[in-house]
Length: 326
Image 1 (cartoon, rainbow, N blue to C red):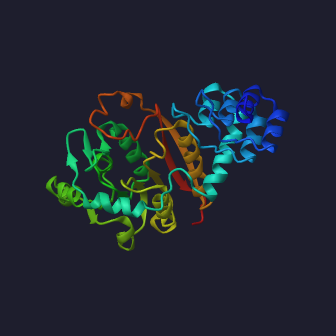
Image 2 (cartoon, one colour):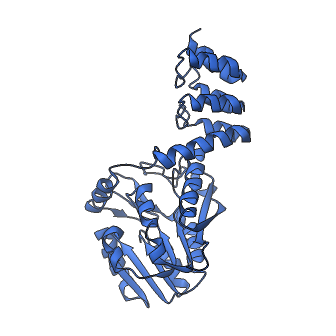
Image 3 (cartoon, rainbow, N blue to C red):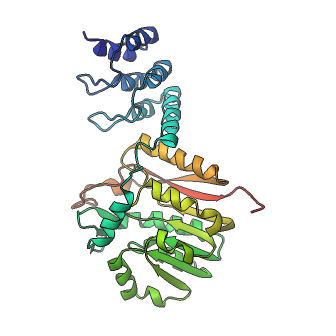
């Protein structure tokens, strides 16, 4: 038995002393055994929180995935091992706050620009980009209606960043806000909006362009929704820096919470991360669980290259300022 195999066995058995000894002797903590699991996954799966911490401290990657697309955090979640889960979540948040290893990409703007330059195709239940990836899909309609209800709950002036299929804007319009501003960056989506008469609707103002380029044209709003395509967490994080100027005191902010929508643990990490980062800016975030099991059927995703959502619960974020004197 190699040191790495012994490390996996010791991690599975919760033998902390043996794990520490093997780590000190140079055993590779990122090794995957014949079952497709690394030592951290074994420890998490069996709820050995102390061993989980030892392995994390030794540099075991918290975000490594098994062949079945499970991370150590997923194994801890599924088995109900709260203490091991908490150790992994804390390690993940610390790493993401400093490094941003999952969803932050240095080429985000390039991908966004590529999408805006490409043609998109429209059908009754989806918009697809040139690579057959879904930009937006009809299964999101109940979620968009819930987002609209949240950002319109104060009445007043509402801003939506990203029109897409118009699901959230249709819902917002039904609440008859004092004004309804829509930012859309894709030229074909923008043309389709005009063909559908959005530029002639009461109290609707359309601003064409990337939000980064038109932010100076914006005012302040009672409700804001953010849902762009071809961007990453860093882009949304950048948008959040403008919230103190864009969101009125007492206003409501929400965003499409598709962060790492293909992995349960990574999704939890990003829900917590965005809540922490907004919290540091003086905003509290409530995450409202909504069941979305209907969207998991194969028929819905037929012809779509990438399933951007594979979880049975959607956590709808409702954010508001904690500073009453803003």
